[in-house]
Image (tube, rainbow, N blue to C red):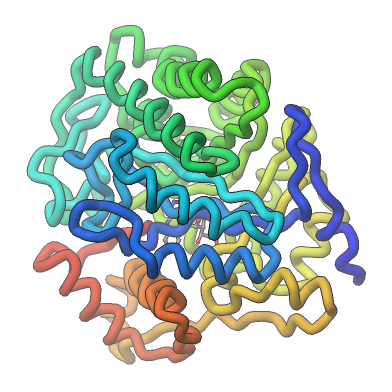
Length: 403
Ligand SMILES: Cc1cc2nc3c(=O)[nH]c(=O)nc-3n(C[C@H](O)[C@H](O)[C@H](O)COP(=O)(O)O)c2cc1C
């Protein structure tokens, strides 16, 4: 099978061109300093992905509010105070002709105890299941807090544009605040922001329309959204299609399909290309480019998805951590399928309990190595990522979490 189609440029509806069909999916790096500024090590990581030939690097989630973090090392942008280093970050992610889009996020109730005493959410509904004990019960947001949060998304996006990022992505997936608003399980409001799907969409629409006004028609705005939440009815596949159609009508440039949340971490499955069918059915219903992420590491699967389905872009996260040169190697036919290691403590019960979270911690460790110009350590030993997690998050670490 030929890789040609993966290297055809893609022109978005606003006229912006992306040099190929491969993008780096957002990965929370946890590499900001204590003041939540990007560090030189973080910039180094983006330089290695950019050198590797990626079409778009979507940054790990950047938080809009330092009172509400997803994890301790998040970058936070509330104003222009860190413009100098933000400019250097943007530059590193585009100096080889690629794009760098900033993923912007608010965790809502998915803010762990290690960083948040009192998370906020559309409704005061705690996270259930085995993941729940890592989080404090959220408080219901007031309408003015909702409006403030939407305005903060716009501010962060405006700073990103000014710093030289070439696009932004609203994180509407994985059970964070935007996806909490969209879900009828998490959002029990009966005001303008809850009830019907249309009202549950209002927070996202406020964010998007605010960004569009501030950023202009030509600036790419992407949305990462779940195909479904896999949790039984809070956000169904039909809901997902309805949201995407609405965003299409409003003029969004790019949609990325994922799935799952802390309770059901489906986005980090061990299988292959698990959201492709969803993405394909969505692609046939709308005109916007649909990007799909989750499980791509084999050359043939990437070629198959881009050649034989309607999806426009292929997302890579874990494979690019282990091999930042992946796009260049594909192009020159020197790529050998990256193997994603199956990490194990060799104690079955532990593996079962902490599986997803060990994976996240392992990949964060490898991202940090890239930042120090070291090559990733490929091994199967889950103890070091497990200890790292306990170090970063303290006693609450040892419950499920994801990025
Ligand atoms: C270390 C790590 C951190 C992540 N952080 C984020 C994040 O900040 N935002 C997001 O949308 N997804 C995040 N994800 C999910 C990835 O973007 C992607 O959806 C998932 O890893 C599946 O893609 P893959 O099979 O290519 O790894 C993270 C994944 C990993 C491994």
